[in-house]
Length: 139
Image 1 (cartoon, rainbow, N blue to C red):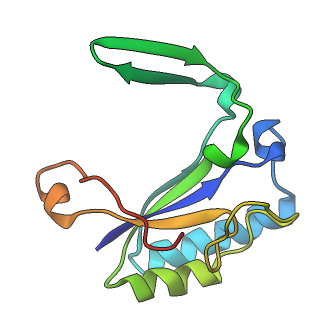
Image 2 (cartoon, rainbow, N blue to C red):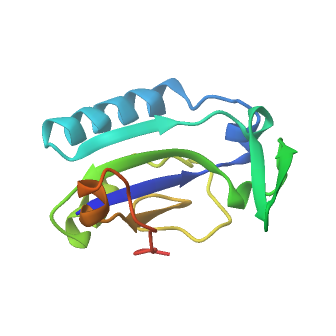
């Protein structure tokens, strides 16, 4: 089963402030563990919303709004794609993750990934070369 682990944006990530050296090193080691275990399919940090845009679909119209966007609770700072055997395995890996939000988060937290969540993909979609719509596993 494929899952997407989402790390929500914070005021610091939106300001372009990098995590501490200690956190970057811990995340690097964690990513190495994921890769050695064959769990890690992909993962990246994302640029602040000031460098992005939103495209809203309204009938035949496409409305483009340039960033930045004020509501950080709706923004993603990074993600991982994992291949795991079960939801329980995904949660166990998430519990091992260094805390990407060491100063806390006002949003709902998922076990082990503060300010993030686990979203399942579709193996059938992967076989067709695309993912299916995701549904939250852990709010």
